[in-house]
Image (tube, rainbow, N blue to C red):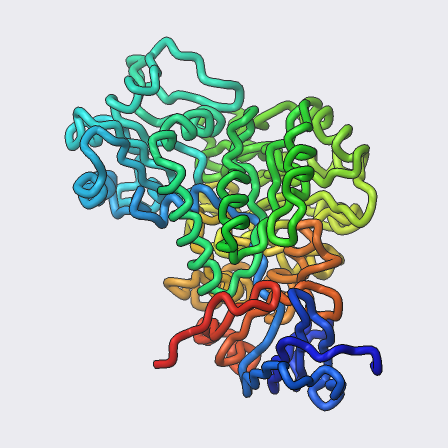
Length: 545
């Protein structure tokens, strides 16, 4: 230890959770520049790390741990819908959702798009799919685009359809649809790839400076919640439409305003040059491109997730959802990327999509240390839990998805399949790596709420069901925190430099007070972020009350 130089900053605490053990203990972290110089037991802190210019903060009984890393974020949409440029709400009914647009209409310029996100028809009273008619009645001369809470469906009014050039004769792109009523009239509901294709044209009216301010604001929001890094994953499945906006990130990085470590995952296409271009342009510690993203299916609530057996509440004979691309086409995309050592992340929600994705990943593994991952994984065929673990494929999951649709799994998939929904305990016991995230803006970015749901199997807002949904799939607090740190670092393809508090890794750290380890599982949400450090720099500090 004699060659250790004085650190810039030392953090001490009675509760250090490095992520390499399953419990906290008294310890210290020494930081030099943007890296950890030393981490370990408090009493073993080398004196050489203390110098005349070394700052030191004692966090008492607060938990000092690796920063939360959200493994699955759609940064553009998250920033947009939390900004004054748009609105975000679920609504209580179709009429209520329309009424909630009024503040946005009042503050946005006349004739501009009214853009909102969050509606979930299955949570409304009555639970019914909306149509353009209600929007037309309120906004006959102004385009309205309402993005669903699951980010897979657009609800448009007639003015929007006209501006976008969509008519009854329009042909949707592969993997998408334009809903029509019994008379063949457009309802205003646009699904999956068709919705994704339209979004760039809808948001095109926002200026670069407006979007930059939204990006700054969202970064602050992330830091306030202890998030030090995110995987910005493609939301689109078409050339040039993935919304991974490296230009906006780069502008903030060059200005010294980027306070979140960003790992970008653009869309996997036959032409794989975009990832190479991003990797060539962005080589700094805060902004990098790390792999590819693709879509294999949709969502269960809309029967677009690909399942092996028909939905229990089938809408037609053989209603098993559908793949967004055929399995053979997906394999043709994955195989050359894997051969090049590029990790691929695939959205697969239904049990058949997961099964076929594992088939592909087993045939086309990626060389270590890179690792493929499957995103969301809501409903498993039982044997695929072990298969996923054995293949070393990361399960990138979002705990708050578990309680988004109370009764939905039973309604859509029936009691036989429900036990294999979000099986976190079973996955860990099989040896799988979990990576936690939020799918923001689908659920809020707060990691503490997601951890609460993972350890209790209850909704973070309603705290229902009282005994937890599938309580046998609960995991421990330490397991949940590791999934949100080391697991997500693995999904980001950055396990060698993020996710645990060890010498040589980036000093991305969050302080929680009170420590969640000092709380019961029921009270985990009482833990608050006291401070957030990214690369050793404090980017958030909770104000004293």
